[in-house]
Length: 317
Image 1 (spheres, one colour):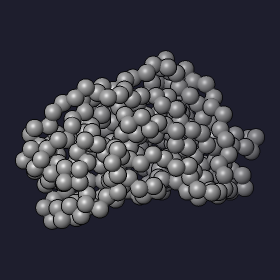
Image 2 (cartoon, rainbow, N blue to C red; image 1 turned 90 degrees about the vertical axis):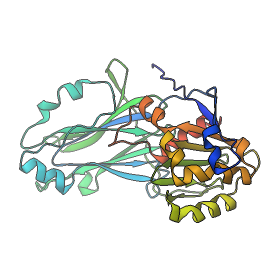
Image 3 (cartoon, rainbow, N blue to C red; image 1 turned 180 degrees about the vertical axis):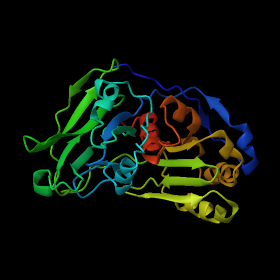
């Protein structure tokens, strides 16, 4: 597997006031991080395929991604408007090169590629989504789960055998040359039992000129967000003042250069210094990270991906 290494300049936030953002000093990259895993999901009319990210069990997951089977997809197929393929740079495979062979009876096949956080379990669920009366597993559908590895590409596809009366989910691992090998899936537990394993404390901020997403360092905290504007400055001050940033807890800010002149960008350095946390802060260039990982407007840098990067450079993975 070819490892793509990311070398980004980390900036130390050692500013004493809101105007000192211009004095940010560049440092050598503290670590190299393998890019996220990626998955290519195949969709077409008549197939319902859904992906659940960070699925700790069937009932607990982070995000539900509909890969295929919506009413909108069906309508587009009826008027011969095939959904466009969405790619983030995954290698071509025999399945993408022969996609047209699936285009029968208004199937309108397509695929979409998604980044995945390595180490977080992924669950796929599928069923037949048409009015033919033919179903999978007596209408209950089928599922498959796996844990993606850093830098590895995958394909997920629903396989149907109408004559044999069976269906399944094919998971394939993609080599850099486009060859594929099967991935053995596992069954996801119906319910989560016990508490999740503890993770080291970390505070992550993903900031753009309009918005700030953040997860506080306390165990099990959810993702919160604030509008990056003058009206929210008081909320930002309160958040930083109350954040459980203990000595030694890393604070990772993922942002592009234009955020420096935003309301939060101008205020944040002084607030962190007031907390005495400036020595714990690293800053990551969001645009460079987006470019290195081939992310796009359709597949932007998410908080989960930013947190994966921050934990990696902090030595927490």
